[in-house]
Image (cartoon, rainbow, N blue to C red; front, side):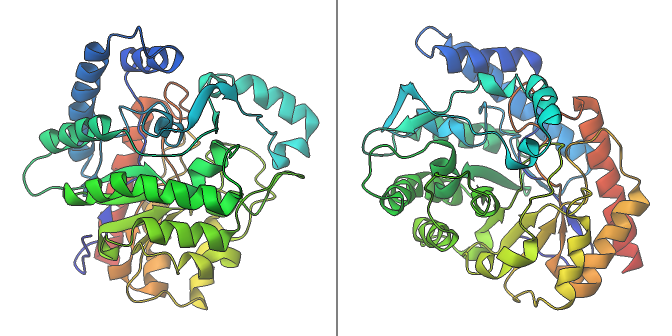
Length: 376
């Protein structure tokens, strides 16, 4: 993972808007993978990766990715790469706790989120094993072929914890057993991304969400989640990995979000050197101040969000600069990379930010990082 003492580097969180025609192919495959024209889907995903990589490079991002073009969702994509998931066993969707506190808002918001309900969430009903080698190799080859020589890139993968969160256990004797079975299976994907020369980003919203569990729902502890994650990536150097924390990528109350301070000590125990987290939205921007008294380990890099991924406001570069300088003055500029709060296409086809504005926001981040670099 690149570090720089000369300039603050820029990246993002992972998902980017997919082209409309690709979205339709992805959802057709989601609904019935047996009749979809797989060759057409693979071809369009490959060209979409080339297009989005070029867009990222054009706005000046230092560390880019494939935009998750081949995935309908950052976590549920594993249903096609792991055994043990029964597509006929749909899982219950629990209302968000912060929305339940405002019933009229919850009803209104449910209508807005109908698109995300198209994505199937299924239960684990059998032994888990990795069978997604061909799909993974296609993803790796698509990204590799789209990159200019010398570019640094990352690829996202669902953590064992987030898989267990959205695809609950109905087979293993305990939640811990399920979590470690997922860790062993997903090890193959994680190590393949590393061997391909990319930074592995582990998406870990379960680390924050597991502190707000619906009554009666049994989930693994935060400590178990970190332990399983470390077991899965034990063969990968820490500086070739980063993890992403998230409190849910949606515009909503968020008044029940767990404070970053409450979990950061345990997050530091995770092997990945990079820690990506929300730092721009109105619920979490203030948390930069915790680094005044929470010492960042010297082997860690923070990737705070300096763009809100749920609003069509284009952040002013001077605001981005201010946010980056605040972090850099507390932890050192060589330990800061500019990032985004979350992805801009968490679920394919349901963007909260218009695709044209996404890249205008990213361009503003690049300019803000330049201003911060000069100031520092």
